[in-house]
Image (cartoon, rainbow, N blue to C red; front, side, top):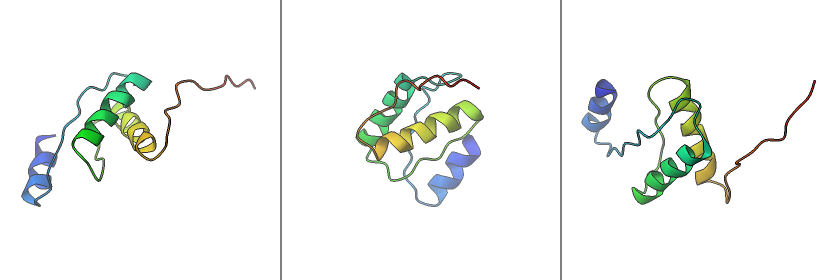
Length: 78
């Protein structure tokens, strides 16, 4: 992550960090990340790491552009 931060800052991009992602992120992680996104008035989301940070980042992006956060999914059966 240090290299990513270095390059972003070197390019003059202000950075806000949300590092509250758990493995298999929950809706609470998305809500917390969304709060940081809004408080810091972010324009973009850049995720660094594995699947959980990427999944949470996608959830934050969706929540930032919609009125509600999906907290459950209907169960599907084959």
